[in-house]
Amino acid sequence: MERRRIISLGRSSLVISLPKYWIQSIGLKAGDVVSVAVSRDRALVIFPGLKRENETSSITLHVEPDEKHTAISRKIIACYLNGYSHIKLVSKGFFSASQQRVIQRIAQSLYMRIMEADVREINMMTFLDESKGSVQAGISRMHKVSSSMCRDSFTSLKDQNSDLAKSVYSLDDEVDRFSFFLLRLIRKAAINPALANELGLDAIDCLDYQTLIHRIEQTADQAVNVARHVIMLNRRGKGISDIVREKICFAGFEAVNNFDRALSAFLSNKVDDLNDIIERRMELEKMNEEIAILSFSEEKSAESICACCSLRDSISRIAEYSADIAEIAINRSFKPL
Image 1 (cartoon, helix red, strand yellow):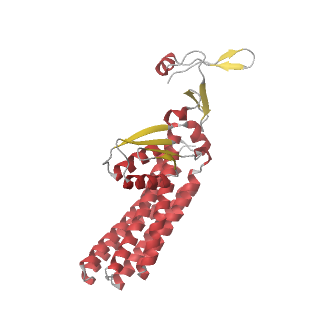
Image 2 (cartoon, rainbow, N blue to C red):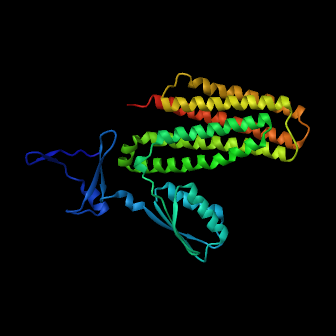
Image 3 (cartoon, one colour):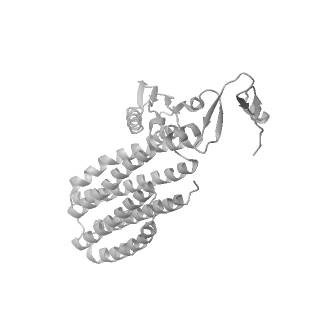
């Protein structure tokens, strides 16, 4: 790190010189304008140009006529997460009806609007003001939805209620929308100290929140998996025996309780009982082993046995994600002020 001496210029102005190698590397010259931002640690950050965010505001994606829907979706999502506000898609032939539907669905998931569209070109834009967002509020809302999904999915298993299980699916898209938006905020804040300052984030916060958001989204995915098996068993006229189902639901609700406790501790920075959550994961693993043995002795159909295996895996994963969140919260409690 270089040191520069502050020089007095006139009666009230203090100046420092900019490093010559930095000036040359980005092509600045006398008379050019730079942007200055103060980060949360009171460091002064200098950006070349008036609005640094404009450098990555627009991008054009070229789409093959036979390009897979998953590939198109991933490219659009990647551009959105990397801060592009205007995404233009250009087909090398023309967009098929199914490709257009996929693009419309992704636009809705990313809070983007399709401004112009024809068979060869689609223009998508987002008008969200990231500086007005709140990462903590978004995470809190995302957690409430995912926790509700988990509880509803295990309740639907307990009551063998496929209608309740189907309602879990409708909330999965909501969690995905929160996830995409929050990850976009965090990624932009990680490279834009001015935005990080407005959002009240430190650099290390971006790392912790990114992992946290992924764990919440993955927990919601496990809720969907539980609901899917409830629907599948009901459709095929199969079921899980009462004793096995009761044990699975008990373990499932215990895992969700750990998830809620870990999130609460993360957001409140109260970490007194987080070690208990991590240790509780091992107890849930023992429960899962007991359920496995019981399911092979009690269940008669292959569908029921396979469903039990998948349900146990979902419980294990929720417990694992909860332990991950607890560990992050513990690590953050020792973060230097």
